[in-house]
Length: 170
Ligand SMILES: [Zn+2]
Ligand SMILES: [Zn+2]
Image (cartoon, rainbow, N blue to C red; front, side, top):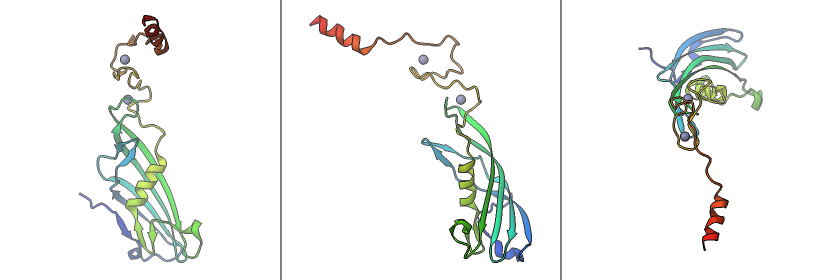
């Protein structure tokens, strides 16, 4: 099994300004917590890192397709969604805040943190088991994907009427 890359020393690539290198790596991605639920790939994911050396800095691009697993946000059954990640970072010492990457410290790249943040930015609005998932019945919690098509409930009597009835009984 290939070793997963977490911290990467870009210095050993010995790139001169204008030179670049492409690395294919396996990256471990920490679970993301969304609405109290954990979403994570089942194991390390393949990622492609493009590194360009600039004068004194780096320009980086990280691409991956992450099979994210976790409970469906509508019915809570297991769901899997492929999330395309495409992140870019530029780090140019002395170039100001816009040109400073939080994931680079000199030649030292925190791939682990970058991959997690890039995934969080690429998340779809909802992670569902299928687009047409019908979710849970708001009244009894039954999974409506499995419930009979006529599943429903009698309308609850308005609680204000119940209070009125009690008043009349007194
Ligand atoms: Zn679902
Ligand atoms: Zn119901």
